[in-house]
Length: 219
Image (cartoon, rainbow, N blue to C red; front, side, top):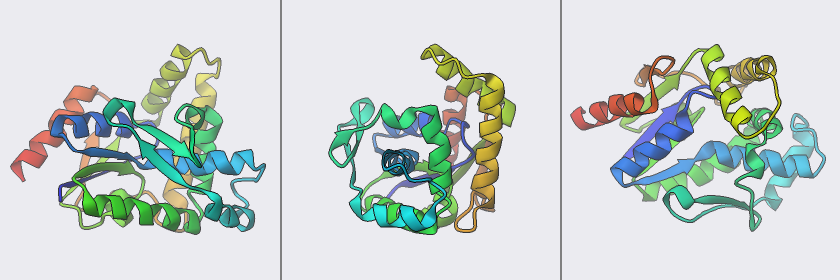
């Protein structure tokens, strides 16, 4: 199986890159971040603090996550409801980072991610794909950019959607997520020694994809 694993901090462009890469290669793309967001959305709707491990864990048995559709039309469903838009709300991003610190949440989703990867040629992106989900993948990449550039991209994206959130607030959230992701006890975000580092601060989407494809085609 062709499994391409991509890790990196929030806002580095992993989802966009991974989706386009999968399309170019004609293989599946699994948005693992959307899975954590779906859990966060369910926890939020239940009125539970995402940091309240004791009360979050029992909710996992009530959660069913599915991806339906193909390519750009693929949607994520939470217990039968299309939540593709709801999980992209800014406050859900922070909650997803919080729930992802819980070991049981990660194990719950990683089991599903590994099962899908074992049966398909696939591109997976997240924060523990190279180190924990698919540590034996032949193709591993760590995609990053400066916190300021990642915040700027997110700010422009939200502004285009009519949000009035400030750049300073987004930058603070980016730094918080970076700290959470790299300091959680279980499966933290790390760059593994065998991952190819790509700094996208001064690269556009096509340039990043070119770097990845060149590596995959020559190794």
